[in-house]
Image (cartoon, rainbow, N blue to C red; front, side, top):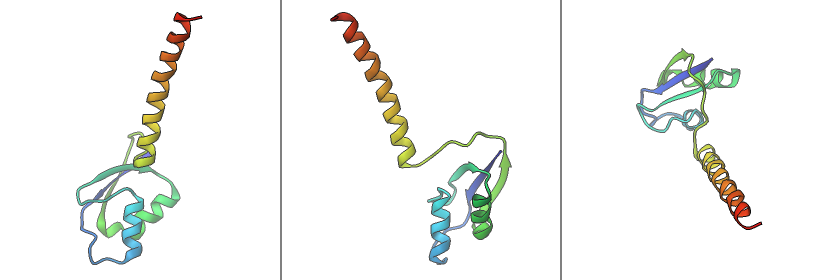
Length: 94
């Protein structure tokens, strides 16, 4: 199970710790929606800044987001294509 979280109020004028918590949930702009894992840690974060969010439980699969997850998936895709090219190259020139 996962939680679908949407940022519905702006973050300006709120405590710095609340801004960091919202950022930790992957929300950077009003209207942004993220599907996050339903863990006690995430539930605590949602409880802390619940007045800024809309939250609903969903059956959607959690997918990692952010720079690191994007870079990792790009590396995996490029490694697969390089490996195939290397195998083809070896097959042509034994």
